[in-house]
Length: 144
Ligand code: DQA
Figure (cartoon, rainbow, N blue to C red):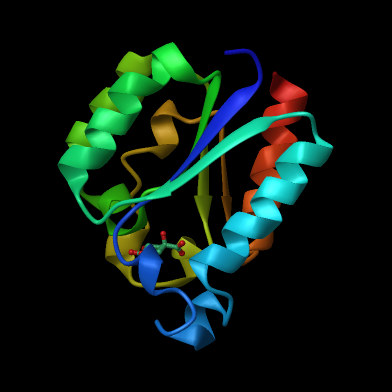
């Protein structure tokens, strides 16, 4: 499907709003989804917005994405720093990948400085809170 984008959110992002609001802000994932849907519409993109706490489910969504979407925006949460399986799936998809994090992972603990996604991504947006998703949608629209 032309100009169809999937945004994949990883573990614990369903807890936004309650989870460490000083780090991740007070918006819920549903709030961010609404903003992203409006942003995608204005950019002429079709958007599927999802969240999973399961690494295997995320791998399956990525595997299916090459048939259904033209780009992947992903905030893989903590799997960013651990998951070779998600890295491999993203690489295998052949799709352009845009990595997003709400927080500035480079200002935080050392274990967050490593991303298994960054080296298969077109670019990484981090530290701008929920606005990062809109930046990623803009970058995706421009790229496509
Ligand atoms: C995060 C950063 C990760 O280190 C963390 O595990 C998350 C959220 C972010 O959006 O800032 O769950 O991806």
